[in-house]
Image (cartoon, rainbow, N blue to C red):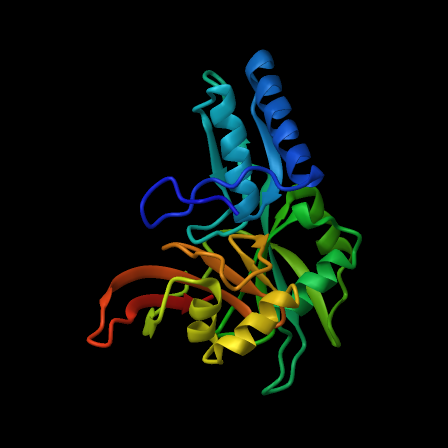
Length: 265
């Protein structure tokens, strides 16, 4: 993992595998096409790690007219939008409302909606954020590429074990971005095992087992040692448990432990 180029911050981690290198080459090709032809071009939906790689590719070319759009203000998965001077367009994002027939106390989870959409033969890059409506169990809003939205509306008949239908949705989504309250804890050091143990409320030995088992990523890159340093802003992904963000670092307690703030997605 790359070290931080700014005190307390993780530095840019270059491509780690052939898939990430291919993403950067495709980003550069897309940028050249947009510029040479003077037309707008768009990628599929990108994760936050993929967005960082795409931005690095744009920076390498000196392209300062690319931006990211996910279809709603709090989007995590976003399209790279390349609109050179004189060219304009609309990002090919549609919102689809997914309505399931549910009984009280029963409703599909996020993974059920995603699995049903991918089960239609859609690739992951066709699917952006999926927002569950807390006021209407069994209702979710999915941001999809235009071609994927048309397919979902035509062919989706179930989500998990629930019958469902999909329809195009116009207007602002009635779901507010989540308000995450950070939690404050103390840690002995800014090592991966210490911070992970505090976030999960487990022992450092248990945190180390998760890391050695290959279940932990920091900023979407796998780690293999609990000794790995962590930085403010790091995102921990623990397979089977969830995602956590190290929001901020504080001072020291009377017992010389470090205060940190984090939240769970």
